[in-house]
Image (cartoon, rainbow, N blue to C red; front, side, top):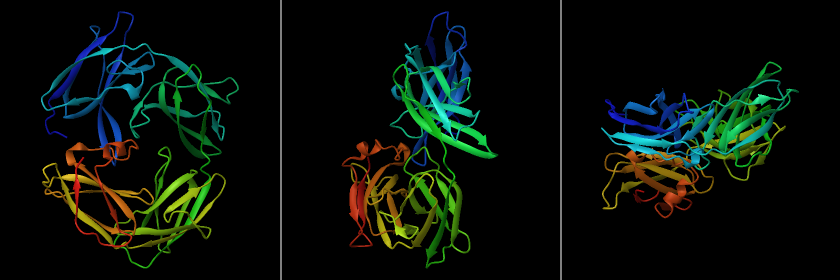
Length: 388
């Protein structure tokens, strides 16, 4: 972030006298741990002259939304977040924009929650399916049916949404999240469920003494679920009381150690560090953790083959695990403690801040990285990686 932000976004809303009390929000789009995030940096009621001005902004990418009578639309005048245009600001730039008001098609959504409460706190967000992590909070709230068993949204603009709910049942706190698309007058019924009553126990075995506390991370394939970081006690035990069903990557949260194998009730999982947690079934894991001896080192270079400060992404071709490392000022990097797997390596200039966890990002990387196989040689020769 700049120490003295000096850019601005100002403009005019192409409205008519029947429109009033529009609220304009400006979000700065940033990358955090490979995901896009939207941070609100400006919010104001648009003046009677339909003008707005958001000063003191930093260099970066921005997204604009307008709230009007419970509806939200986006610059340059579209009703769906996936169609919105990002605004890239430079230092000292004063950007002038005109926002149109789109013709908004609306539909309704009915749903239920399992296990069924009588009430819940809802939080609705607009999302873009190809940009995981990018959510714009909305103010729309559903109404409960007379029998208090189902709820529904009326007059919701066509688009893609994430719906979060929190509720209490039998003195137990529940949380659930789902995503849905609405591109017709009536969407399919939405089911919000949290069968997180499955418990997970495990025994972690290792023949090395880590320099820092030992943790096991469960990373969900489904980004709607939560990442779990589980401490390992002095006897090598782990325990979780409430876990959502799904597919998880099991990794070590301790530097220098990797998960060598995972078995559930004595049955080895299909991949050495993955586990499937099923509704209604408890899980008992045996996890072997060790020190990987593979090393990949090299240099990220630009189109002139000169070293460049960059971020380097290492993707395990066996299980999809991702590791990111920065380079020094000359572009040199090193990954250590790797398993005997094949890897793909990609790099980009450090200032680019690429959201590498987005599934579509590999279209950008296609043909731009290199492949390294450590299954035969646990220590690779230095490699040269061209930046994207």
